[in-house]
Image 1: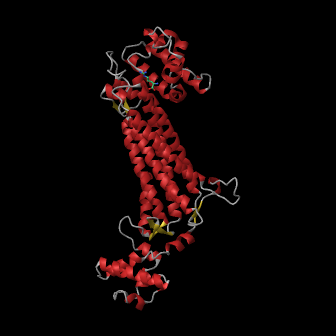
Image 2: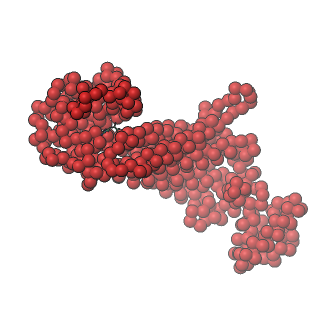
Length: 455
Ligand code: ARG
């Protein structure tokens, strides 16, 4: 008979049984389930609900089961879920005392506990991966600190910037990603155990004691919320989706930069693949798969949001599938962060090509306007004069630097010989000293500050 089978006359239909089983994916929670059960047994003894001997036998049995699972001696196949499977094994091992473990507990608060235990460990891992990717970015930035590249808006050349400044943008995105996950962790770290099925318990359970055993800083304040809340999963997956989006944007740039049209970087061969038809090909597949997986993680987010929408309180079996989205997003974001960071390490920066491209397309036109502003020309007027100057240079097929001072003066009398210095790319970059701007001295400071942030 099933552990819950007392009121049933008929066996479950085999198709329904297979359909309802979650063991294929929730067996992954065996360690968390056992950890939670051991704490629960200890609390029951502490509260005088089971005897010390009963508790010892339960704890010993659970520890053995854990070892047997890890050694491959216990395999799961057609059990309903991991919670019932472990209890069944415990019953085989220690007999009817096993039946006392589930006192004042339901699978509803049990599964909420297991997923919280699982996720808080994984979030800590993901925070470390984010930190090491940030470190890789800082390494790349400091090694290439003075490399100048064209900054783009609308994917058109805009103004020259430092390559280091550009990739540091990703450092700050990841910093926000960390903060988001840290915030999420606070809300994951709330103990749901003791909520029972929905209403709490009439037995003298001690939830604060449980929280201390399982290292939860907080205990859930409402038993209905405790068993129906999956917000922490939505928050996590949405945080993961944001990380994926950031890595996808970075991947897109890496893919573009490695084309022969850009030629800004080359990716280490160990992170590229060839074509089965075209012998000459070296494709940026890792960056492409990172970009592609983003869609999958967005899918996990939509999946859980839709799963929860319209569910009445409290627990509903629909929620069983929450773990599919949760596990999928955890696995994919970890793998992505790790491989992306390794790939980034192998990127070689082609500084001559970046510099040459930075000079194309009149990138210092805005600098000329600011040059005139410094000589007290109203910005709008300066903008028009330099615009006309660009038109003139274009017609003459010359760069702005190639124009003579007389030619420049024809557009604005305030141009002087010192304008040629201001037109140099390096001077342009280094003049952007406003806080957060691309001047080399700013970026050097930013790297120092960033190092402090990741400790
Ligand atoms: N396998 C179930 C899940 O993952 C466990 C909880 C079942 N609770 C219940 N009342 N049937 O959600």
